[in-house]
Image (cartoon, rainbow, N blue to C red; front, side, top):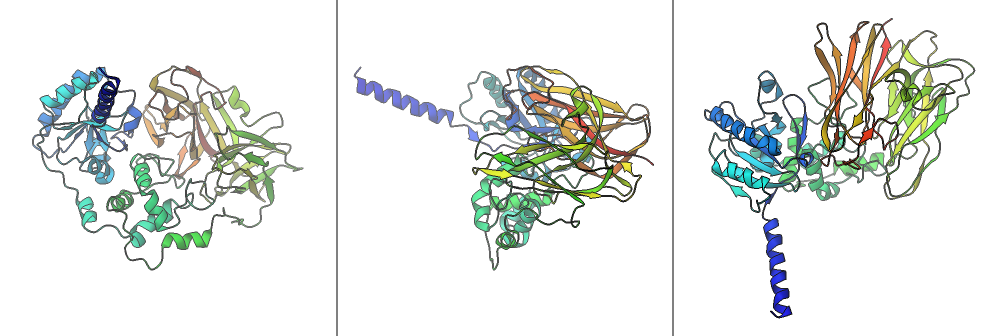
Length: 564
């Protein structure tokens, strides 16, 4: 055969092969909580062969038989690496499913946004999804075609999306259909949501990677905005809205999510605009971090080190010990952080430490440690904290402040010099604000997607719990905080089901928890040391406890003060 003809055959074969590989329908990544508050994201099931969803509607007369057939398939394929879920495509909400026992996790589709994006039309619709390539193996109902498709998925022989028969009760998308006919208004509906929830960080000079300071910017970034809302990357600090509440968490309501995503799906129309609210806000606030002392001039201003931040790369934590000139003990009743460069300072933690301690103090050697925690800095907030009346942070004479800085690069070389304003109390005897670090020691095996963790502590006096903070490194997956009631039952007070190493805020509880002496508190969570964890440096590596970022740690912090 002549070389030219051989070359043509090879080229045609490659083109056909690429076309075959591209024949699977694409789907967007998404994330949902389930009926018990667990977090599930399509792209975080790469350690499994497939993710199977079935739309659930209890009122549909055929549902019991469909669930039974679905269960048979699960018993056949689960052990082979296929994950099975029901999805609440009617948006009935967790309370409806929490009271009943379900064989499968029921994914909460708040606002029907994921079901609508996936094109689910009927109760009993089944989708077989490829977590690795974000594509669709099968769309239809429980059928022989579904069973055959799953078998072929395990053989890696599905090259085209299989469409099977569909039946079942129709699912209505009332809000989506209404917005399709009359899209949300950019000025009246969309811009206020962005201003309230996004522009604290996404402004000129802010820590967000781009500024949402005009309609044009919203339009340009709309595909990414849609993506990060559906997979819950944004807003950051995703917590479970059904367990506790904190103003430090960034909650978006179902209505707000529907408004923004449906507006984007409609083509992000600008409509009639006399004045762009985002442009007006940008002109008003500019890019400067708050440069006012909200509570007035502090009694003492701590000047942090001049930390140089390169234009690119990933920076490890930086630490600094700040000596204090006080000739007597001090009680701090309030604080305020002012970032030197808010575009790169991602978070900052400050403890009161003895002269012979560093930032970690006794946490290096002990699994349950009481510490003097001043407060943390989080991007986009005013970062002002007034402690509860009659309480304060105690700084003994001769002690100092130890700070931990986390920076993100943004393409420009800069230097950060952050200020911490301290406001002292004239009262001599306050209840001391403290933090209880509750941790455990462990060895984390490789290629483990859900390595369960647990730590506990018993308070020996009556205390008021004011807040919590989760602390793990790159392999952290989830963490929740619970109080053990009489009889041994655990009552969860706060949950971080989708831990993110880049976001470690101190969640101040809207409703403080008063617990009596002898009460045990629990920290419950897990690591993901698998290929499904996008921040995992090396899923093949066994990891032990350590305080460096390349190690792992599992520490939950309870902030509290003693009951007078």
